[in-house]
Length: 232
Ligand SMILES: Nc1ncnc2c1ncn2[C@@H]1O[C@H](COP(=O)(O)OP(=O)(O)O)[C@@H](O)[C@H]1O
Ligand SMILES: [Mg+2]
Image (cartoon, rainbow, N blue to C red):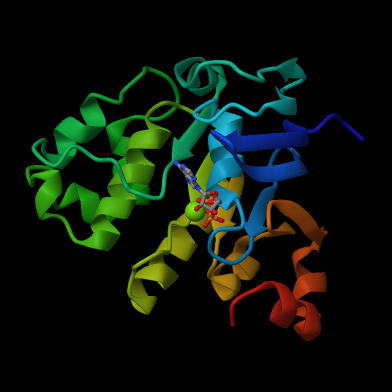
């Protein structure tokens, strides 16, 4: 077995005195789509923030492609090849769709043209200001912007949150396409159905610790566990 692309080992993370993660370990292999599940407040976003160096862990280790990146500043983590799409869809409201993408351009595999192939809706909206997009369109733009940085690993924090079911189905197809193109994905979700459709493997968090890890199919088949650990 080759070394995982991302290896999170026993991380402990806190906000000031408030401890949130208690020894979380996660592995994501190249080309995998791994999902981090769990109810609101269990530490999914904090795990992603720990990986990105936004809230560095107090103990434990984060390695990317075998390199210890624990405590690196987030711009360095991004430059190393980890793209982060946070929960709050941080687009520039006063810039157009085109400008939002252009400022994120790094030179590399992803171009605006390729992004528009994946998100044809955005092609129709190039001149529109970010602030005037619907929730689903903003989510597409946030993902598109992050892709412009040519990540090898994409961290998606609750992309389906607040979106209408039809929009979620559409997003599901687009994420599946990214996976088919070989992008490695770590997805945090509360929407279990959405994530089980996409994920190869899942980790379920409860109170800052991993309570279940295994194949997505194993969780799909275990209704009692889903009931215990996930909001239904
Ligand atoms: N900036 C912060 N300062 C203090 N506590 C926080 C902060 N962000 C999150 N928390 C707390 O950390 C815990 C985990 O939050 P979070 O990682 O956002 O969970 P999830 O993403 O699974 O909903 C929660 O109890 C939350 O209130
Ligand atoms: Mg969260």
